Length: 262
Image (cartoon, rainbow, N blue to C red; front, top):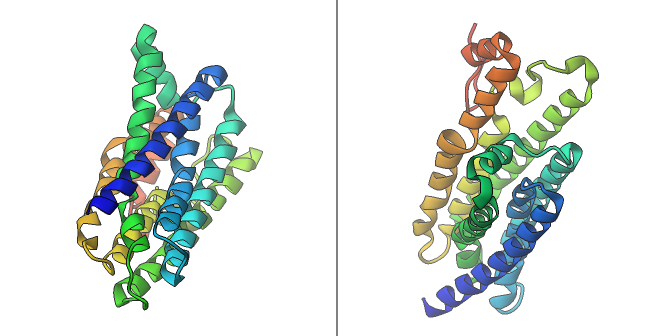
């Protein structure tokens, strides 16, 4: 337990330092949206840090490290392309916070960035537990977690690519993407992102105490469905696309991919 706590503190120190740097950079760029890039990409170095701290790279550490690095760097790069593509225009969420916080924006934004760093560490516990598992072979839970992760990673990558390609076509400007996975869910990217965390939880079940990480997919589900994911995205979509998006809401599943309603 003491060793786990020590490495969680090491991870928190790294995340806090990273978010301090990103906050200073965001002030210089006047764009707080870069925190999304740092948060997504930040899981990769933390997972590598845990693997190195466990002493050597066995098959399990290579597998969990590879899963985290592939998912984290792909998502971080996707968000980098999106944020830089809109820069210097800031994401509406952060522009709204900037207007709401007024003169206290720097202090409150710093706290917000540090909160993101702390959340990153809280969600990294499955990687830490798996990295410190001394068992030589893989358990059934780990194989299941790896399989679910592969499906989720491919699904999220495909959903992001389909939306990116749709938006790149000038003829689709102002339209509602209903191609590929977006025909079966209004937010397939969020669904597969949540499934990634289900996979990490399943993988952690193969390690001692892994059951406690059930809070990871639960937290992500709450954030995606109730807080910063679907609610804010749909509010903006209704404002900008009106009845076209309301019809999409009426006929298409909001989260879990399913056949469209007639």
